[in-house]
Amino acid sequence: MRHGRARPINRERIDGPRSIISPVDAIVEPERGRAAYAKCAWGEAFEALSSADCAAPLEAGDLELLARAAYMLGRDHDYVGGLERAHHAHLEAQEVAPAARCAFWIGHNLLFRGERGRASGWFSRGRRLLEAVEGDCVERGYLLIPVWLEQMGGGDYEAAHATAAEAAELGERFGDRDLLWLARDDQGCALIKHGSVAEGLRLVDEVLVAATAGELSPIVTGIVYCNTIAFCRDAFELRHAREWTDALSRWCERQPQMVAHNGLCLVHRAEIMQLRGAWEEALEEARRAAERFTRGVLNEIACGRAHYRQGEVHRLRGELVAAENAYRDASRCGFEPQPGLALLRLAQGDVDAATAAIRRAVGETTQPLKRVGLLPAYVEITLAGGELERARGACRELEEIAERQASDVLGAIAAHARGAIALAEADAPNALASLRQALEAWRELPAPYEVARVRLLIGSACRMLGDEDTATLELEAAREMFAELKAASDLAAIDSIERPTAAADLHGLTAREAEVLRLVAAGWSNRQIADELVISEHTVARHLQNIFAKLGVSSRTAASAFAFEHDLVGRGQFSPRRG
Image 1 (spheres, rainbow, N blue to C red):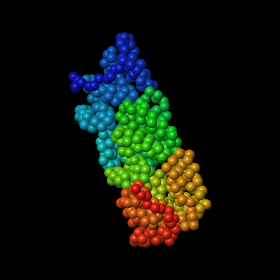
Image 2 (image 1 turned 90 degrees about the horizontal axis):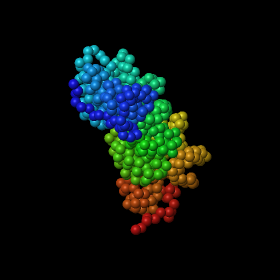
Image 3 (image 1 turned 180 degrees about the vertical axis):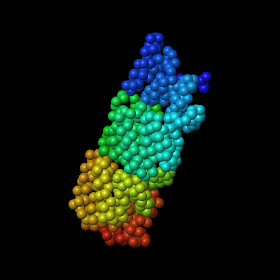
Image 4 (image 1 turned 30 degrees about the horizontal axis):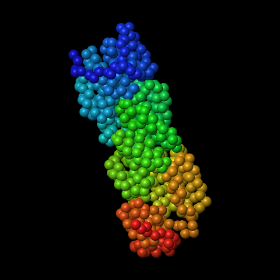
């Protein structure tokens, strides 16, 4: 007896409406579909099995093959519909454990499509069915997956590791390599997020061996690739992310008919290309992901990331309108466009909007590794706004996370932030010590844009110490890298650095604070300064507080006198604009 009606497979052929098939074809088509499936020819497999299903309903095993082919083509509704029919066919044949496994995979797909209620119902059905099965079975391990996903989502990494270990033991005992390596992959993720990075990476590297050797089913192979790249990227283990992405690319290239994982693959490739300095190629890959691969839940997830990656490249190239549009597209796809959008506001000169956006994003984020994705921008923006103490606090947090995770990349990020803060404090020796540490790590990766940014700061620190020769060399090297990358905003930053004069010492002031001081000394009001610099009066007042503290004065008059006495202001250089 059937337990309700399942959604039927859409039996139209891939390239058009279904045709009428003969009884002979009805016999041949299932075999042709199985052969195509074995060759990873997903379109052919789906077409042949669908045609056979039109003539006579497929048996449970072939229904599962049809469903999996639909998944690989990004046809999620056909995937779930096929699994539902396979589930009921297994029940009619009193095959309870296979029916429970189908229930798991249905719930798994629905969960990632955001249909948590339906997903929970299918997981519960699977567990209830297994209550009638005597002894252990591998399907019990599969139904532990939603448990560890919930534990991971809640930040309970120890419990998630234990649950995944229990599932791995079941997979190993019953010889199910899909479950075994899915579970070990998540054990590795839990270890990485808990701070046991080296141990976790060893485990996911072992999973990579199984995936690249073809030991896993196609769907599980794709899940393992995409999950593990995300784990490594989120933990800033960029070398591992790059290696996994290269392996995923090769896997996708061997399956030209596949749709399901191509979007995420292209986004991962774009992220790695941007890091390597291949910005034009990164932009093209992100565009392909957003425009060509939109079918299926995985590609829907990838779409927001693809738009965000486009925004990042446009912003770095100084294409600010295009960047804004890309960030808006990312937001429409449900992807948080931070910290890119806040850094865009900073590039547009709106420090207040940038500060509000980055504070909000950091305030909403609790998981340490996710905060790392925001804190460098927080440091940059608060330094631009003259909020040194806030920048110091963010830097301390970066240092603590980097120490706990023992990651070279995180160490470089923290060192870069520490060096930028020391430079803002006119502490050039300490700035150089931190910046050279960051430079070494970025060069080794390599990450040319990050190298150029650090060399720009090193040049500024050398200039502060009076070493003009080294400053010139560092700035020229940074300029050459920025020019090669077409990093327009950073080229403008180098252009804005004033050539040294006999009295170019800013006495610990940032460039923006020196600019505010010159205007104060010229007799401008806070309102006039705010209008001139396109910032708020509140930001002007904050700059003045920092200026007074650094110069050891307590009034505008005293600060102005200091500026004239130390040649920080060219007399007659400024006059307030009228009208």
